[in-house]
Amino acid sequence: MRASICVLGPMLARRGHARISMPGGCAFGHRPVDLHLKGLAALGAQISLENGDIVAKAPGGRLRGTRVFLGGPFGSTVLGTANVMSAACLAEGVTIIECAACEPEVVDLARMLTAMGARIHGAGSPRITIEGVTSLRGCTHTLIPDRIEAGTLMCAAAMTNGTLVLENCPLDALMAATAVLEQVGVHVRVLGASDAMRATVRVTSERVLRPSEITTQPHPGFPTDLQAQFMALFALAEGNSVITEKIYPERFMHVAELARMGAQMVRQGPTVIVAGVKRLIGAPVMASDLRASASLVLAGLAAEGTTTVSRVYHLDRGYEKLDERLRAVGASISRIDEKAAPASD
Image (cartoon, rainbow, N blue to C red; front, side, top):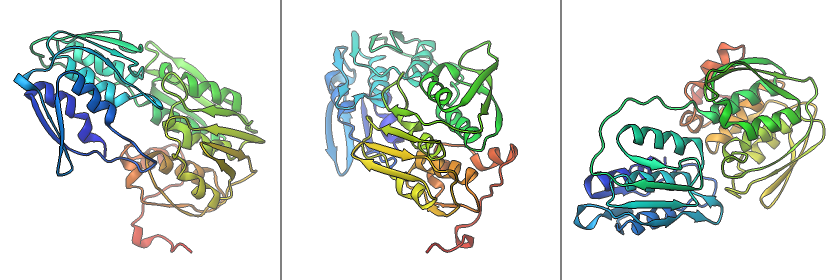
C-alpha cells in the first residue's frame, strides 16, 4: 500500500523527524515519490535512504516556508500535494505550492486542516498558499464520498442495462465521467441534491451502448482510477472506442484478462482501441491491481456464464464489501474460498 508515504509530511512537521518504509501500491508501472521528497526538501528537510526506509529530519525541529513547484512528467502529484501542504501548515513562514493537484481529496484535506487551525488558501486550484502556524488542534471532520466507487457503480448499472439509485454521490467531482456516460447512452439524473457532493442520483442505461473516447488527465479531467471500469463498459458498446492513459501509461494489466472473457481490444503504447462485442463470456480471471479488479467484477456481472475473479484482496483495498453491496441490488455474486474455486486452464 501507499499508506506509508501519506504520513511522511504530517509526521515530519509534527515531530521534526520521520522514518517510513518505501511505499508500495498497485503494480502498474513506475510510481516514484521523488516529487514528495523534492517538496519536503524545499521546506528545509534533510532526506536520506537507510535500509529501504525514507528518513526525513527538520533541522532545528521546524520546517521553513518557501515556494515549491510540484509539476511532474505526468502532471501534478495528489499525494505529494497533500504531503507538502500538511507539512507546510506547521512550517515557519509562508509556503506557495505551484502546480498543485486540484483533486477534491486535496480540497477535503485542506478543509479539515483549516478546521484544525491551519491557514490554507487556494485548495482546488493549481496554486495553494499556506501560512504556517505554531500548532494545530483537534477537529471533527466528515470525509467526502468516494467518487471512484460511485463511478464504478454507475458503470455496473450501465453494463447490466439496469437502474440504480446512488445516495451520497459526489456528483460535482464526477463531471468528466458523467459526460462520457451520457455520450455512451447512460443517463445520470439528480433526484435530490442539497449538496452537489452528496447527491442522490438515478443511473439508467439505454439498451444499445455507443462508443466513445477518453483520455485520462489530472482532475478535473477523466480520472485514471476509472479507466479500467470504462474499458469494461466500452467492451460492450456498439463500435470502436479509444482509451488513452496519460497518467500511468503502463496501467493496462486488465486488457489481457478482459480478452479472456471475449473482449476485443488492441493496445498501442499508452492507447487501447476497444472493438465492442455483443456479449462477454464468463471465465476464470486474475486481479492484478485495485481498479483492474473492479473492471473484472463489472465484466463478470454482464457476462454470460460464471466468472471467477481471483486475488480479490486487491479489490478490498479500495471497496468496502463490494460483493455484498452488489448482491443487495440483485447481482448474483458470492465470495468463495480460493481453494474451492474452479481450476484455471
